[in-house]
Length: 135
Image (cartoon, rainbow, N blue to C red):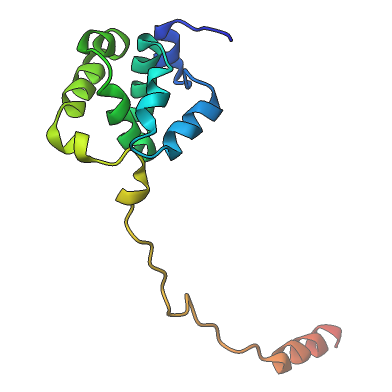
């Protein structure tokens, strides 16, 4: 596995864990997520929390992962953003939030009205135009 420096990970904005693990964490239930998080080293956990924090669909996961990080680690890898993430992850509302964003999504509603109305096509005008052009 290729390791990158923490600054590279934050500046270049790439995920510090493999895609499969990120997907497992995203789909994990509340009771399965801590086990997955424990399998990651603390520095990579901090980078992952910051990575997820910058993506709205991973916000709940960012808070859950950041809750397992020290303030020092989050600040070391994310500066002021890390400090903010640390504070947010310690708020009571953050702990009650589900780790998956599916439960937080607003319902999508679709219009039942036609998007636009068009006048019927008049083929007679095309025939008249064609006759006038050949005359």
